[in-house]
Length: 414
Image (cartoon, rainbow, N blue to C red; front, side, top):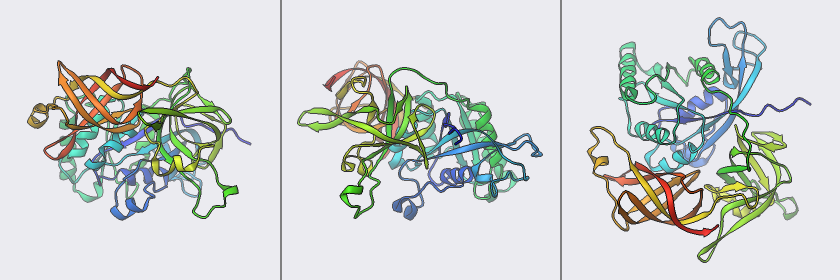
């Protein structure tokens, strides 16, 4: 039995709704990750979709871009007939682009290694969510970006060049000013080998990390089909990304913030019964990929993403659970954006707080001296001095208005 090759990096898509993020993931993987009825009906990504792809070398391809992914394999062969040599695997995280789903997007990029910023070549740059997603990537401290100029099949040469100029102008004074801009057609799989080659070249494998096991939950499932007999029921499944350390089958784990009991929270303790990446069963979860962990939990606790935003670790190693936050607030400054410049906070204002993979509604208690006090409607588990992204409605749109550093607050579980 051959040894399983573990994914060694996580790459997220980003960009405005309907610019082709999910189609790009399909071109890279050969799999359509929009699998939920609401997504198919609305033709847009609603939930986070994730998939692992292989990166293969095709030695005799007549191009400098000789690294292809699963979506370009034909009957298990390279496009030129070579036998593909698997170099590595990476995980792709497909995030939604619509403004009402910005919380889902931010939770998805809370721990990634690089991003594919997808831009429709037939539309002016930047579109609203292009700008919001790029702001989120900037706050998260990302420093690796590949710009994907998609839908080249819909424009002529002059339109493509004008769109390219707008992209360069948009990124001109930012950390991403030297990021490659690759013209492609996801629909027709044109230049997809350039994207996969650049992923391999620009995104190094994540280094193994020690320390206590820590995982952010991005999805949670009940995988039992309706009508399953009690003796065949399996426990709830947690999907997400490992931040540090590792865990194995049969390890005991703790989940925070856990169950709310009155004004307190009770951590959830369970055991790992299985670990999987895609359809592959493995024995250990570690950083670098998006994994699914089967547990002994009652599946009612994990159904319909009910544990999204939770933190998983070995019992006794997880950070406190907070119901109120005092943040050192840092405003987002965008030249010419007067609406953002005028944003302030008043008592009882509604905000969204994003920390780790959690997106939680909050109510402002006060804002003075650069300190923002927020009462959360649902507690979060995180360390002191964590970075917290704040979104707020500005002119009837949810906008990223800044970020805060957690300095103090009220804990309901130490």
